[in-house]
Length: 250
Image (cartoon, rainbow, N blue to C red; front, side):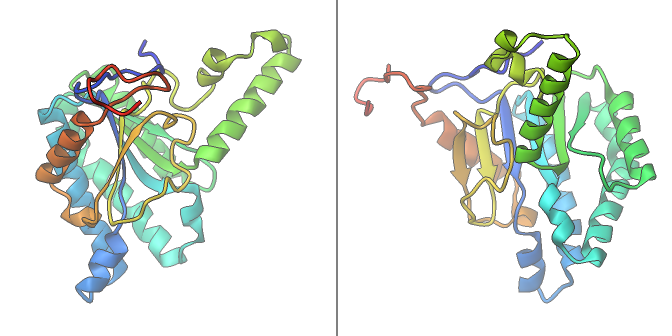
């Protein structure tokens, strides 16, 4: 089972890349199009990026598809996003499976329609065991909610006598997170020029490297991903220790 500990040293490529896909609405607005057209263009960028990640040898790719805060958006836009998820799974699942992509979906099932939950479960079951690329989709996901849920489950197991308080440490805690068994992201990319996490993988990104690009998500290509990987390789990752790279700042 993959460890949650840091997985990359200086100049090595990332095992796990996570992307905050941002800018669909602005992309559509700039073209005088409805926001749903931006989201549809964003789905096309997802297809491009998944293929590119597999080609580049990335082992894990996590995409922030729908946050728990996105329910605050207009109902019509939320419905459009749900429809696009349905369409993506319906149209792309078999190609992803044939390409060796394993799908894992993290996030709460609260407020999700029954058919959405069934589609998610089917996608995960259909692709389970594939090894080319592990595609993690964060849908109806919030990092703070994930941590609270992990704490609640630990409290329940402690009350039930399954664990003792003294056993609760960092290594135990990560087994209660939605990402249990997935290495922490080495690299987080956010598109559209925004420079914040927006409640994404708060625990897991403690030592991640960040690359921010002004490119709007629908315009994100393999070339942008390669550029982010090149930037990552130039970083000196110390994980709180002293740099081992000559001339690097300490």
